Length: 98
Image (tube, rainbow, N blue to C red):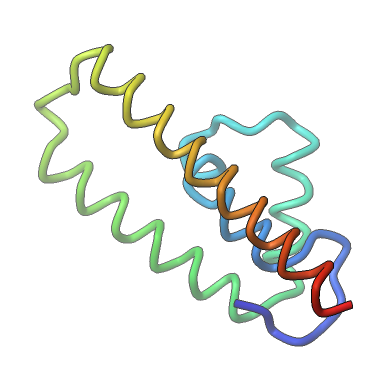
């Protein structure tokens, strides 16, 4: 997704970090980048609001159950793998079209 406007932090990068931001797992610099982008980008702000609502709904429905540590580690590892694959693919696609 992109709103078509230039931002210091690109839309796709912000959206890739939305859940990390929502979970409070970004450092201060990363949080500042995401907040600044959301302040100036309506489409990303709407997407953030949707993701926030989904997270709250899931939390409300599953708050009493906690995933085992090894499952959490596996899921986070897989998410990191997928993000790496997406970045590699985006990088390859960008250099071909340039």
